Image 1: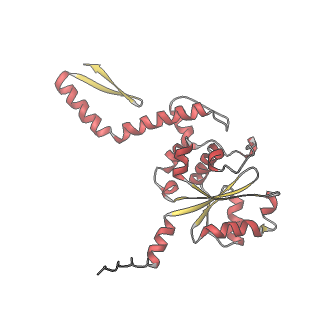
Image 2 (image 1 turned 60 degrees about the horizontal axis):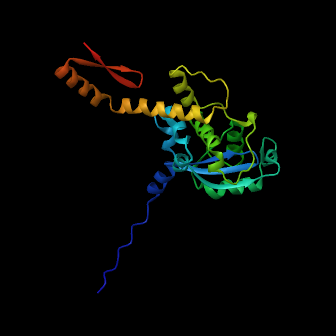
Image 3 (image 1 turned 90 degrees about the horizontal axis):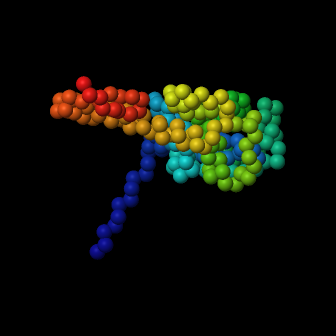
Length: 232
């Protein structure tokens, strides 16, 4: 006789709430419309998230692992889709309600937060970490929103990622414009990974340094993200 498989127990209300609390939906404005993304809340609420959010959006393949496109729609007149006077129009409202499902909605403008919370009664997130994600999506927009064929205008770009700017400043590379070349971003990412590797392995490297100096009398000195040997 074949044994009947036991059905998995139905998730409890607390289980469902925990799942909802672990992810969020993001409303992203493109040149011709709006896109909705889904992502883990840990992307933006970790203690060090402001340091490394940008690093998830250097390459398209990495960005697609960090955030997932759920829907994209074009609007002939974006200003009529959401504004202080009329609120959120029916089409954008339906788009948001289809995917929100009790999760929080991240938005890129404080006025969007105010309008959506007041008119749709949906809790919204607008903070520096959210803006880091907005910068990242803009950086990878052709891949993340393939349906968008228009280019971002200079005035529509969000300010440069604070995490990226911090890395560039650490290495005396002061960039004042919003637009940073792909080469500079990739260079900063490589330096950031080196710094992270040193930080993550600092204890092991110190122990190795102690062993080297004990055996050979050669001291290991950290210089930036690297270590060099120095004869005592």
